[in-house]
Amino acid sequence: MKIELFVLCDAATDYQGKLNVLGTFDTIWAKKMPAVHPQCAIALRIRFMKMEEGAHAVKINIVDEDGKGVVPPLEAGVNIRFKDTPLTSLAANMIFNLQGLKFPKQGEYAVDLAIDGRHEASLPLYINPVPQIDNSGFQMPPSN
Image (tube, rainbow, N blue to C red; front, side, top):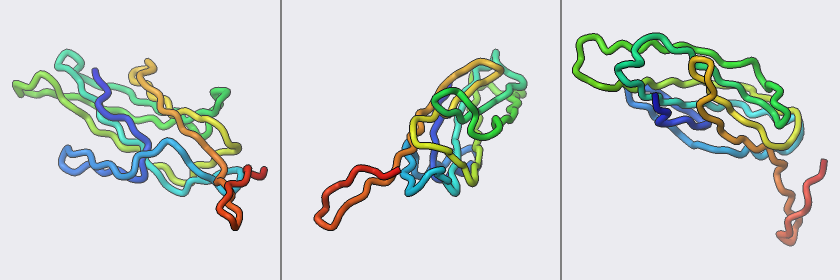
């Protein structure tokens, strides 16, 4: 198994096996805390070899710096079937749409991916305050 794509993005679609991804990011700029991000998606493309045919469990956790979950785990399954094809591998696209993500404080978060109970990849996600600019264009330190 190989993770070909794992990103946090503004939106994603799967059209006839083609994964379309719009606006990947790793930082959310917030005017106030808690920060609420209205809508985003996690796009995932996994390639399975013929010997990995069958059902696989996919789990995504979004956690804070202490490993505490921000939302309940996102879980889905994928069933890889080669049928009678001569192909030696198949790719599976998965999209997890998220709405109203709430982050209680600024800092570093992680989007963790596990397949069949084994950690496979992590993405950093930074929640930062929007910098304040005064009338002269000078960047002011963020206020809490």
